[in-house]
Length: 478
Ligand code: SF4
Image (cartoon, rainbow, N blue to C red):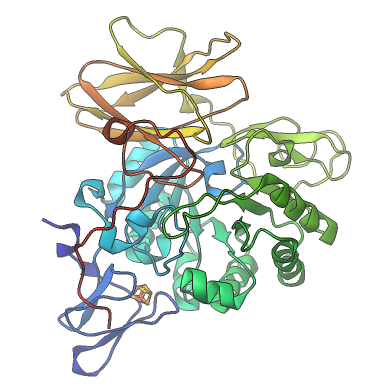
């Protein structure tokens, strides 16, 4: 059965004459006739009622770190459970998750079915305290997120919403009681850019950011700097100016490196000097915390105290370690507020051992080019609980202990392996014969790869696989 054959009642419905409905979830406000779907491809009219076609339908749940979501000032290094779905209310020409964000390209093999209880149980069982609603875009998963985030909140978990935030005021109002962190992609301050490249509009995004900021939520903003389009000083200046005028200089701001993808493949990655200049512009204008995203081997991913210049958090790619913060999130040297929200220590989250049992199969991957992280997806095919192990390998012969993950009978689990230092050459994963595994190369943060190394081999460049456009089409948008 195709993923879009079942449906769930949708919220934010307006019923019109002749069995027509209007959707008030995103500012598109699609008017949908019976049997048709909206722009996103995942909300439809069935018998005169608005329905969600993707409730509980997800890409594989994936353990990552909070830095994957461009969140640097909330629980540095915290493990998160990333949940992505299908569809999007926008259609950005450079989307690196286009195989899941554009509903017409979604393949049934990439769709997993979860209940709200499944998600919360998985997070708790694996010692994860933050659920991240991410990847394609959480806006179009509204009903499932509300149900699951509420359950997660009741269990003491934190909810993170990583989005392009093309969403209505009414829908944000429903999210505010259950979402703690908003990581929002503010793509540009140019309305024309939004219209042409994202197929959305700028104003509702700005209004939404102000709404969550005023509600007192933890907010971080990121801007993708597209080569020769938006990787210039003016883009950085316009973003910084708006943050300073409308929000707060303490909002962490990320200027993010672009890689060619989807309909924008005939170009190159953002030159790093342009990102460095964008960061300088932000700081010169008065922003307190400006970071580079998708850039390794730079100290500008770290946090330094703006009072005494002490290093407060060390980051390498998607890894972070607190080095100079006190429990309040202030500099432990001079006491200046560094605008962090810290979580209590979580000692029991990860078990390690020095050597795994003999007889396990070991799979390894070497970091290459711009591939510095990967998803490992493992399936326990037995009726017993089993353990799998993973660790980093270093060129300087440093040996790390193995981290242990326990898998229930028949459990499928996916987690990120991310390069953590300049000396790391790649990860290895050890597992018993009853476990099958796939490794997926990740292109930049918050990318959900759908094709594994086993299927397509190692990619020796930094450009993601070419689009393979399916010929299957859904009914016409009204
Ligand atoms: S794009 Fe989807 S979410 Fe947005 S208004 Fe249309 S149907 Fe609703």
